[in-house]
Image (cartoon, rainbow, N blue to C red; front, top):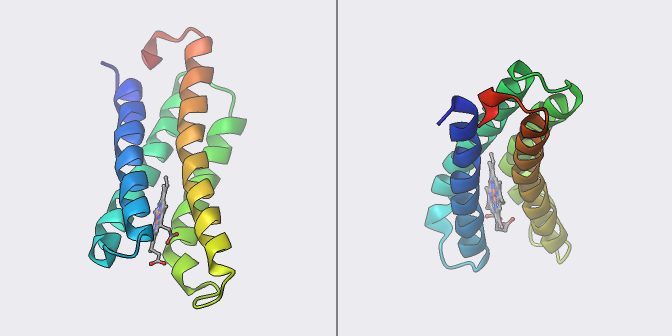
Length: 126
Ligand code: HEM
C-alpha cells in the first residue's frame, strides 16, 4: 500500500466517522461528541492536504490540489465558527446544511484527486 492510497483511505474512514458523528450531534442528543467530531474533522483536513501534496508529487496538474488545500482551510474555518452564525435563528438550519455540504465536498475532493492521479497511470498512487 502506497502513502497516497493510505491517505486516501484515511480520508474515507475518518470522513465517514466525522459524518456519522455530525449527524448524531445534529439530533441534539450528543453535544458531548462535538469535540471528538471537531478533532476528527481536523484529522480529515490534514489527510486531505496530504492527498493533495501526494497527488502533486505523483504528477497531477496543480489546480485540483490547490483547490483542495484552500478548501481544507475553509472546512476548518467554517466548522469552527458555524455554531456562532445565526444561532437561535430558524435560518441556522441553512448553516448546518452548508457545513454538511462543505464537509462532503472535502471528501469528494480527495476522491477526485485520487481518481485524477490514478488516471495518469502513476504507480505511486496505487
Ligand atoms: C475541521 C473540520 C470540522 C469542524 C471544526 C467541525 C465542527 C463542527 C461543530 C462545532 C459542530 C456542532 C455545531 C453546533 O453545535 O451547532 C458540527 C456539527 C456537524 N458537522 Fe462538523 N466539523 C468539521 C467537519 C465536518 C465534516 C467533514 C462533516 C461532514 C462530512 C461535518 C458534518 C457535520 C454535521 C452533519 C453536523 C451536525 C449539524 C450541524 O450542527 O452543523 N463536519 N461540526
